[in-house]
Image (tube, rainbow, N blue to C red; front, side, top):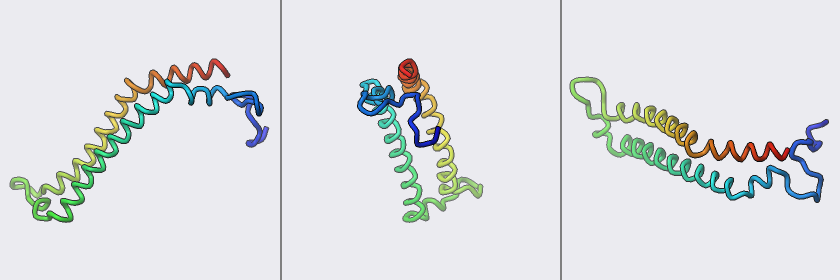
Length: 119
């Protein structure tokens, strides 16, 4: 079987109706799952982008603020904000994993099981 041949799993001959995958994509459950996923991803991406832009704009337009030393150390506000970028990235990854496990994975598993039954 070549890469261009239709697979026996999920492929339907022309004119015989939608495949199980196409049926699943049209289902209200799948559309709700995609909507939840998109809402979370776009919200978190927007928040992180805004946080990053604040950091960059402060570094560019408020150098006195970012060069302010914290106490008697060599740590500056800019360095602290830069380190917090890494912390926030890790926090977003952990938050997404928890969100997906609770809100996305159960529905995705149901949809996958339903499609696999039809194959």
